[in-house]
Image 1: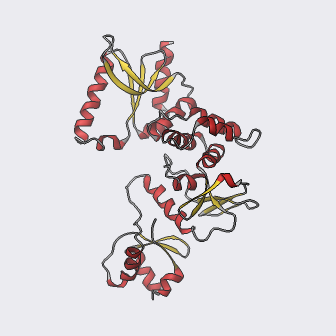
Image 2 (image 1 turned 90 degrees about the horizontal axis):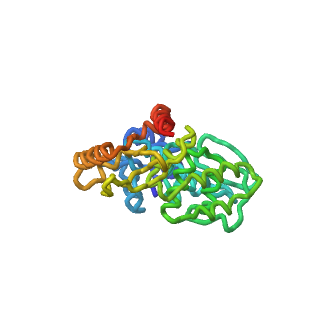
Amino acid sequence: MVSVFRSKALHDLGFTEADIRDALNCCLRRIRRGHFVLSSPCSKTDHKPLQLLHNATATEYPRRYGDIRDNSEWLRVLIRSYADELPSGAVFSHVSAALIHGLDPPFPATDAAEVVRPGFHRAKKTLRTRDRSLSSEEMTHVGDLPVTTVSRTLVDLAKDYPLEVSVPLVSEALRRGLASRESLHRSIRSGTRGCRRASRAFDLASPSHESSGEALCAVKFVRFSISGMIPQVNTYNDAGAWIARNDFRHEKHPVIVEFHGVGKYYLNDAGPDRASSENHERHMKLLNAGYRVFNLVWADLFRASEFIKIRAAIADLD
């Protein structure tokens, strides 16, 4: 949770419009019209009232990663700014609900907070309201935030967003035991808009996808008509010695696809150099065992070239 201030609260603290502009060049950041967030510590005397209130409420500053995670973090801030202003009957939904439940979108899917509210439909720059009906079993609270349940959130995402967004989120929920594929399929209302897309998303999602990148790989395989790629498979050489557990391996042919997230080398206790060396050693063992190995990084998931090569390699072996 972050410290959100409305214009009136700032004025009540003695801030003039000029003072607010000064703070915006320092420790304050505008979220939307009339709403601000304290974004960083500050020792400036004029801004001390903001820092004292922040410290008294034991809230956090928005996190900064320097990559696409910053978009999700800013969306969390935007959601918080609406916490006390939702109209009657409105409940956070879709990507907003996923974030509230602790699920992380693979990339910036939207820059607006999302809610459902029966009888209302409106798309504003910072808030999208969808006209949807909800049963009491499909609503819950996380802290003070009204939100759709994990199951309803995943169904809404699978119906309304492309597979590239929904499959990684559903896979994460399955991996964390927050839902089951069977229960999600049962939650789809047959004949409703997006039900086929949702069913396809639930079929593609898997708890075996250990990251958003791997789940996106699975989607791209479908987009490029690549079949037979099995996630998380143990691979052995001809002598029966274990080589590696691979992200994807073809069910019939010696074709392996590995996804290398940027962070994996920095999560290794020995540091990036050792992790990179171990990865190279594993790669050479796979090549010596007769496997064709495709090593993908995040950028490869958003261009066609590598997947066209994978498809061609499999076609040559058929």
